[in-house]
Image 1: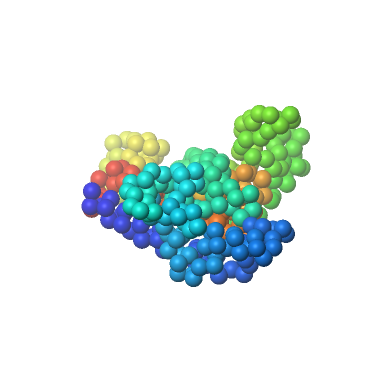
Image 2: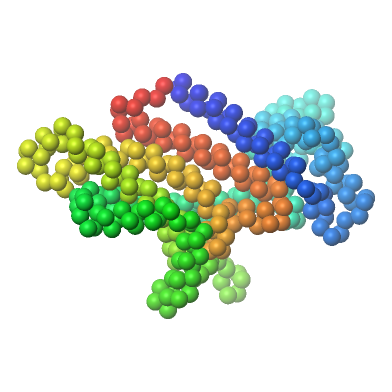
Length: 357
């Protein structure tokens, strides 16, 4: 319990730091948010209305406090319609806990405001639509990385210092050194274009696609193959190296020699005794990589046309759609924190020697 309370407090401070950083970083960017929202149709009167409605004409510290108020699950709002921060149930979707005069205390989900470019669409909805696709891609990539990485690591251990071991080491080292965006371009061109007649894979495409009549969505499983392999290459290489190194270290311990003395083969010793003790560092690595994949899929999604949060961030940056970028970064940071807490709990369960307090 103390561990969870400590982690929650640390997580709160970390999220506050991330929210503050992205706010001040993007607020000082050149450009007028009101003009971005109105595009080419603005006039002085419209600009004044937009700036007043969204608080762009307020001092920076006031804008910052109002932004934190929108992000907070428990927030204070005004019922005064002349105030840009008035409470709108259709926007905030929360419940009023306390009301006094024209002020209300509300419990709600964090509100990331509205997109500058997508006709005022709430950023919460944009994230809700795109995050599942990114999560599917990240999970698929980790499955590829874990299964193949563990297999390669075990094979390298069994055939240590032999030809196959050296080949796998070269493959894993190359995989760690190649940037994901380069792999994405190469795989998309090679397997989606050059070898398309054999692979039947598309160069680009998302998980859900409209039919030719534009009426219904269908799941395109084959569009998941190339981006998940590309995104899984780097963690696969790391898992291969970690598994090999940890297994070699565990195999040198005394209880392993005892197992050998009982007549067990090397494969039996690895699968029955060594693998469980060697896999804990791999689990820690997997957790970090999974959280990183949620953030690191940006260019892979963009190159493959995968309609996820990463592609949304790139498009938002191109259009200076600041609320979308800020909301996406905060959500990714939150997921990163949650994943790390869950992995700490799993790690302590698998290894009783590790205590969390």
